Every structure is written in C-alpha cells, then in structure tokens.
Length: 256
Picture 1 (spheres, one colour):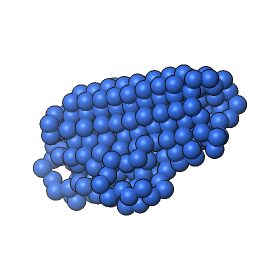
Picture 2 (cartoon, helix red, strand yellow):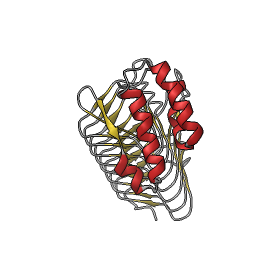
Picture 3 (cartoon, rainbow, N blue to C red):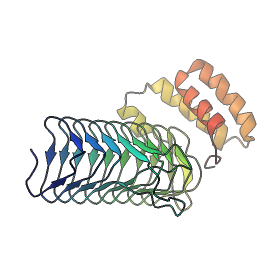
C-alpha cells in the first residue's frame, strides 16, 4: 500500500498494512508497525521505530536530526508507540548523546498541527498537545497531560500527569500532577477537576487532591512542611502519592 510516487529506502522495514502516501519519504533505518498510515508529503528519517496503527498526516517531519549545536551526526533514535495521531507540520526530533540518545513518544497521544517535540523529550500515554504547542529539549510529559495551543515548555521541565496547561502558557518550571496552570510565566490556578472527573476520579479523591493543593499553595508553609502534609494525605488517598513522588523527583523546582 505504498504510493508509487513515494520514496522508501530499501533498508526501511514496513509491516503489513502500512500505507504511505504520494511524495512521502521514508529513510534508512525506519521501522513502521502494522496499520500505520503515513499521509502525503511526510518525511520520516531514521533510526526510528514507529509502532502500530499510528496516523502521520501530510507534511509532518518525524525523526529529523536534533536542533542542538552540540549534535555532530552521532547515531541517535526516535521511538513512537501505538495509536498516536501526528497532525500536519508536526516536527519530532531524535535524541542526543547528552541524554538517553532517544526521543520517546508513548501510546494514544494526539499531537495537533504545528506542534514540536524536541530532542530527548519523553512523552507518556494519552497526552494532548494542541496546535503549535512546543517542547524544548529533555522535557518529560507524563500521562494524560494536556498542553493548550501555543504553550511553550522550557528545556528540562516536567509536566505532571493529569495536568492542564492553558493556551499560551510559558512554562519554565515543573508542573505538579493534577494542576491547572496558565500565564506568562505560568502560575497555578487550582486543580484540573474537570479532567479528573472525565477520567472517573472519585469525589473523595478529588477532594483530597484539592486538600494537597491547598497545603502547597494556600497554607504559607515552606515546601518541606507542605510535603509532610502531603504524606499524611497520601496515606489516606493513594492518588496523592503521585504528587509526593513528583516533588521528590522535581529537578527544576515546581511552579508556585
């Protein structure tokens, strides 16, 4: 199911049911799983491993060299899971040797038009990046996070699970799980209650997450003191463990 006007390198490995549209280019070292559809005029450069049932739309650039002045042509990689939707003009770069050498995208993600995933980024599952959202290098996006249109994330930041970053947010520090943030620079605006409701979080769990939020953002405590409160809440509500672990691992410090 390869259009005769497409160019596919002889070393590329395309499994059964892969579609490649006209004028697309599949480079050396690219592996594409069953059922993945590559639209017209897309470019995929290897080494890259792309899973099953993905949709890569026209004019996407997937697996290109990292935009990093330290990059000197070393072999680095891109890994994409299953059932992702990668829309028009999205750009996804491979990793660098200064990190894990691999950019990774999990399963069931939606990358809308003009989004950018820089070198060494790690995306979990069920992430949504709305139009023109952009990630600097080495960014981690945890499961079910949503980035509104034109959101910009500084390199080395982490966006916690189930968080929501509003349109046009400029993010230069880590975003806690369950948070809503917005602004330039981004500031916290409560918990992502609607997102949690849609994902069937219980009312009790949401109340406890809000209690944890208040301990961090509304109690005038130092972060170390608030963390003690979070441990107590987590003992009652396992969902809050995600916030405790995140605070322990935060490299750049959290948005406050």
